[in-house]
Length: 211
Image 1: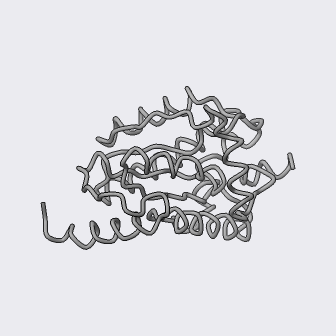
Image 2 (image 1 turned 180 degrees about the vertical axis):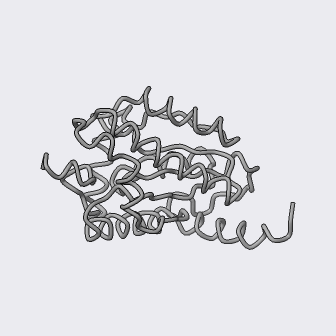
């Protein structure tokens, strides 16, 4: 193991011990497959996954894409909520630079698609691909997403997209259905308890018309 990894290990140990769920728990450094990037669609949806992944021993870092969010003021609100949640849970956090033009360019062919259609599937793919690329850059071995906590999304489709992208990037996809065991309700309850910002639309420029 490279000596340059030691500061990262100490930082993760400190954050983990600061999390009240792990005070006094023994620290064990995992291999890179236990270093996991959690793609976060929004802070409320990450409340339950963050805790459960820590329970499973993953060294977790949150990843927020954000290029799909419109307008920028909305992006700033959601990014701040993600950063706050990650700090509260004692996990790392990476927010991509805001680049809505790139997202619009990638999805414009599906501008007329209804919510939940091909545009949304492409959006999931773009976000998970960006998360996978970040995982490779930072040396993480595993990837998962908070998207399957939603009762409005098909977890088999989302996990299928994740598996495909991970196979292309040499990563392990951690297949989860977070909405099981009242996961969605628990996320709503905890986000209210933490005072997290809760949006009233998906986030993209197209979904605003359905608010």
